[in-house]
Amino acid sequence: MGRQLIGLLLILMTSGPAMAESLASRIRVEAERIEPKVIAWRRDVHQHPELANREHRTSAQIADHLESLGLEVKRGVARTGVVAILKGAKSGPVVALRADMDALPVAEETGLPFASTARAEYEGRDVPVMHACGHDAHVAILLGAASVLASIRSELPGTVKFIFQPAEEGAPRGEDGGASLMIREGVLLALNVEAIFGLHVGQQGPAGTASWRAQEAMASAQRFDVVITGRQTHGARPWDGVDPIVIGAQIVTALQTIVSRDVDITTAPAVVTVGMFESGVRNNIIPDTARLSGTIRSFDPATLRVIHQRMRGIVAGIAESMGGSATLEIEPGVPVTWNDPDLVQRMLPTLKAVYGEDRVMPAPLNTGAEDFAHYQKAIPGFFFFIGARPQHVSPQEAVPNHSPLFDIDEAALLPGVILMSQLAFDYLSGSPTKP
Image 1 (cartoon, one colour):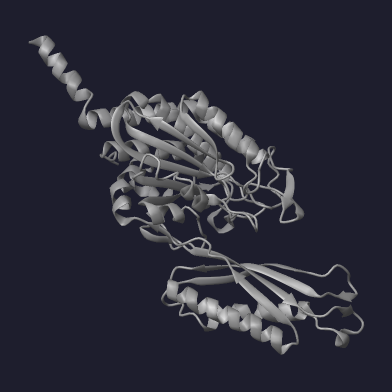
Image 2 (cartoon, helix red, strand yellow):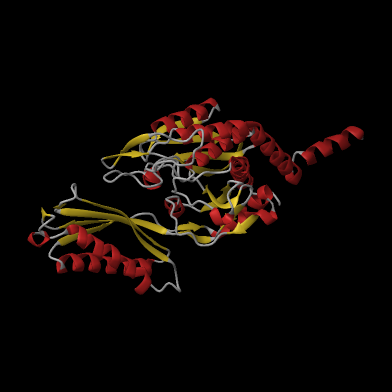
């Protein structure tokens, strides 16, 4: 009778809620054990940033580590991407976890001991390179999650696909890349991935916090380029030519009236930003051409159509009225990051279990953009945010992503690893961990 009772207790302890609680503890313990490695990975990637479609060193190191875990690894996906498959010992569905790898053409000013001094070529120019958007942290977190999940593969009820993606910030002009290219190369179709999860670090909250939003979470984003043609002349005789710089200046100013005067901002936010104005080679020569480049952000297709229509009228009309001409190109860009409401509702308990009920908050609309949205057009996806504001930075002094001063509190890495690991396990097992 005693042996039967012991046997029954063992069964209860290794099934249902007791088993889930035990595995949650194992995930946390394993994540804590490898935390120093995760920090080291983040610092190494941070010190050696690489631009979109050029992430050769980063992807090689990622692939090497994943192979050391015994995962099935494919290199060179969508140019420099890495995809790894972890098959659990038990049958079940397939879920994907994604991290982006690329850095930005930004000169780092953080003063960190592992700050980047890297330089590279970007669209024909020599530029400094920095992980100013936290992708170094994303890589480290997902490597950590792969390590944790590999350690419990004997209990894993299904398959996890790890996607390390290049060119999230957009491929260089004339190239293809990013999530859309990975999808075309079959990253979701192979093994029939059911759902995908992704995260982003930022200084919107301190380490140990997370935020989420169902449905529209981040804006769509489109790049636009304007090429203005004038007529070159001596700077001392502007009346003998057509000045494309003055035309460009008028266009920049007029573009700012679209959102302020043509968009109903009571229905949805929108942004039109000129981020680059390039023209001329010498102080006393009015050049032939000028070039503007920028970004359009929106949450609403109707608003986007208004913006496009007004941009075309402004660019062509101003250039013609001043004796020049101009062309406008708008790339298809990235759709709205749309979190599947059912998936959010199903997995939100896991976020709260990892971070705590009072440390997980609804997120406001974000006019940033994410090409993770391409995955969400194909399958249900959940993209969320984790706080990483350094302790010495107040909420009022929070540094935005893409700033040369952007940094994270590395205490945010450990809960990120635990969360990604737990999300994968909970999705596969069909029973989210209770807060």
